[in-house]
Image (cartoon, rainbow, N blue to C red; front, side, top):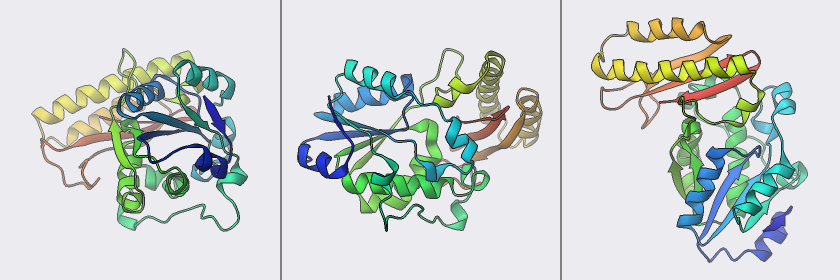
Length: 269
């Protein structure tokens, strides 16, 4: 596995005329990341993984500082998987003078996490734009746990990048909790409570499918979930095609963001 720290060397060493697959991460790799890499290895001739904890997408400095990092362990995982290339840039390499640290989004798109985490997706779009303008991969592999992130990347960046975006299903544990690097920050009790929340969300989806017009269902489940966490940022049902509130019985998704103490978790079902 070749490891790069600068865009210039990366572009000299990698032949992007080949079928290259790109998996961007913030490290602290888990089975969700591994699933993305396995899909990339099947579909692409060569795979490049990036690890960069992007400061501009954190609206809370404390959250950025405590975000789990395990670079040595991550490198061992990637080597065992026979990943071809690893890109580990510094902040100075990413945000050189004159590089945008934020990309504005429209007011109508400031819903869900874009509303509750001001500036978050503006930072996500900036880093993804920077990476994709320099890593000219054929395919970009993203996990659907971050559904809103994929939606916004497609909407704001797809036309300006050459890569085809491949959405990959969310990987969950046996009790349906989505895998996340942030799970490492949870206490045992908080972890179990989050598993119960995931179970409630799957139950809610079944009930909405059967009794679509029963609006009280959301409020009832919101009350139940409140007893299993410290705070709910949002619990909403939206159209997965445009994230609007215009939904139908066959076209809806449940979105949630909540906190277990100071750890913020998201899910969509």
